[in-house]
Amino acid sequence: MLSSTGQPSTSLDDAKKLLKTTLEESKTGLNEIVTYETLKEELKDSSRKRYINDLDSVLAMTPGNIDLHVQKIKHLISRKRWFEVANHCEQMAAKASRYCGVGIFKGDLQDAAPFPDMKIEELDPDYFTRRDIVVPQHLRVLPAAATREAVSLLPKEIMSYYVTSLRLEDRCDAALLVGRFLRKTGESFDNIEQEWQKLNETIKLREEGNVFFRNGKFDRAASQYKLCLEVCSETNTGGQINAALHYNRGKCFNAMSQYQDASTEFTQAISIHSMYSDAILQRARCHLQMKDRKKASANFNRYLTLVEGTREHPYPPPYKGSNCFFDMPSDVTYRQVESVKAEMEKHRIADISSNQRHSNTQSGMSSFIEKSKAKFSGLCNKKGVTNQVIVNKRPRQNGAELRITDGSNLRSSINSRTSGTKFVRFLGDPPSHAPSMRSSSDPLQSEFDINEREP
Image (cartoon, rainbow, N blue to C red):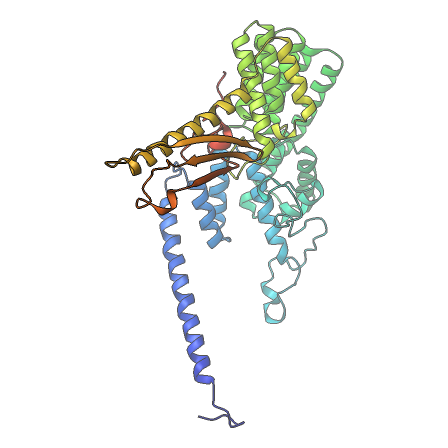
């Protein structure tokens, strides 16, 4: 069949390509449906280790499913991860802000615009996807001015969780802006007045405690902080403000030389925020005052281990590590570390953190050397063959280099590549079979690590 120009028609070829593309997309769609149904079934068990990751996968397929968003938020709340509750809400709002105004909804689609009259001024739709921001998106926080627009873009089923998360994460300026905006515009949820009252009481009581503390009235400051904790004591509460209030009470008791009570309060703060570097350090000093050198040493070295561990990995992965993200070990300066080490040396407390890591590294290398010997022994263990494997370790700046020299009389028929000299270089992390350089209690290695134990 010829076209009007006399050239062979390609309509049949185009139809075949279109049909092929349609079939491929149909298969992909069917596979996604199967995956979706499988994950939905697995989400019935919220105790599964990968529950939150599977929930994210399902939400990626059905981002408009409000029930699933609520399900995820409730799961995070049950783990006291209020920072991530706020982050999830703000990421939802940022995505929704792309549809504000008429925008892409033109012509006969104009009536379908979800927010036709809304103009966004403070909220950046690309804030959580921008690559020029060093902090990963799961740890980003919207500016206070943008939270008013963010809450207006959230479904009503989620508004209350967002406002509560702002208060418990000690973002009171943002919470005040959001509360005033909701009351002014008439946008509300069932417990907005109760939440508004709690917010104002929290700000008032904590500020009174701060004034008493600055004036040296530590007993009255501790009482005000306790009242503030009672206001913030929702079921299964966590959040930055509760960790900070326990820390403040610990400072009050410490100033009054009540070191046991101070240690208890610091422990409460650490149970909420397991990487609360200053609380760990203050608890170590309390144990020194109580002449408990064993616990003091454990806390000092925990502090150093966390700080040195975050030099390489300052940001924990999503849903792992501490429940809060303030006063982190990665915020500690080198000068502060040297000051703590000098304090430990003054009290004759050994810095075992670096020694332990060196021991773990040596153990891993020794394990590799023994396995290398066994491997070559197996190759050489034949009649008439004398095997000899010499392994020398040479330190290098970026890792360790192992030099394996085969015996001079090793049969070339076994493996022609075994003669001569081989180099096996380790750059960065040790091999998979070597013991981890982090302790098993490292919060970066466990999901939702919220149970802190006194060393």
